[in-house]
Length: 324
Ligand code: PBG
Figure 1 (tube, rainbow, N blue to C red):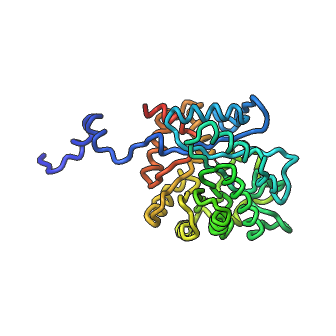
Figure 2: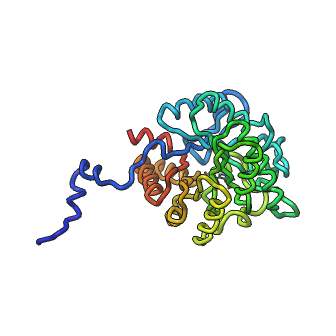
Figure 3: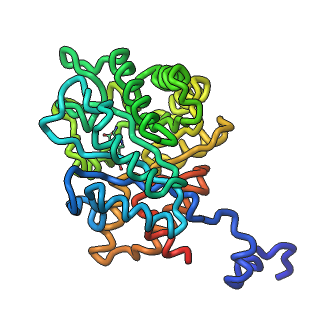
């Protein structure tokens, strides 16, 4: 055979492959989600997320120091709210001395350069387990947005670098931006969960925070997984309203959406490699059906290749160790 082009030339050794690889993961691509509990010296493994824990703040602070020393530069905080503090208004969400606000302060005190992002949504604080206020069986938009603005301002006051609204109410990015401006929080960023789908893959996360919806589902606010153009519409609106970073969530079943969004906007795009995606790899690895380490790197590389500049992932620590 006489061929003008032999594509295997570029694949013949690992040295050559490493010269021409298009997508390379790095520690500063990752956002580490952390789950925080009340109390001291408490560490609870999440049943459906083997190897992942909900920790009290003292343990969390030690962990965040370790994350920083490994080269990780960002955490995304979720807290587990005590049952007796939950109600339909979600008011614990903007309690100045709430667990979230204390956690932001403690982490920023311990590791000032760590980029602290905070989940903004009412579900962990809602007696109904919904992301918004419930009236006559409906999740009401505008009152919820008012609550989210208060919540965001309280996170900014506590020292959060980015607030990350994950609720999918209409108009919340613009309202949060306005609230931050009016309160002189001109350095607080917004990472908007712009294209967040109503997904069955959030199951393990809801176990972690005991935040499953008490009635119905989240389909009146989270997106229908059959839709693609809607993701672009949502994202463009969030950028217009002032989002600094936009997010697609989940990641793995939505790689096409990540690429679509990446091509449509000029702000950084993040993707959330969510709890169910973590659980699938863990379960298959436990059965001996997949090589866990290879699956982690291949999955995260695919998410970056699809267009994610940042990846929130429960595998961040593992990935950093594997990259060395
Ligand atoms: C809540 C929230 C959810 C996740 C992040 N923020 C769950 C939901 O919308 O029900 C999911 C994260 C994961 O599954 O890892 N607003």
